[in-house]
Amino acid sequence: MSVPQDFFYSKSHEWVSLSEGVVTVGITDFAQSQLSDLTFVELPAVGASFAAGDEAAVVESVKAAADVYAPVAGEVIEVNEVLEDAPETINADAFGAGWLFKLKVVDEAEVDGLMDADSYEEICPQQ
Image (cartoon, rainbow, N blue to C red; front, top):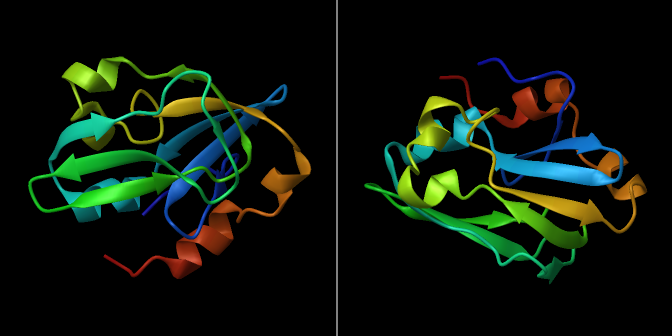
């Protein structure tokens, strides 16, 4: 398994990319592989605010539904509308085109509390 070194990760398998006070959030390649073929994504509303750890979205597959949590506190400023019609985009490109939503971060220091790529890989069972 290979995860981008410049992202941050949560124990619940979300990834975070930080740029100028905004984080882009998605689920990891490991998470999408465990879920299998995604069939539906419920995205948060633009303008919604979340605390770190709040349920922010839901992804559903032929196998299961899984909650996606806000890895840091913030306000939703954009969602990936492509996923409404093409949730399989997450399966094809979890770390790129399959991003879920963007948050304007309340406190950038919260990002430092997330795992780096090496730490995240350690918690993932070997496939």
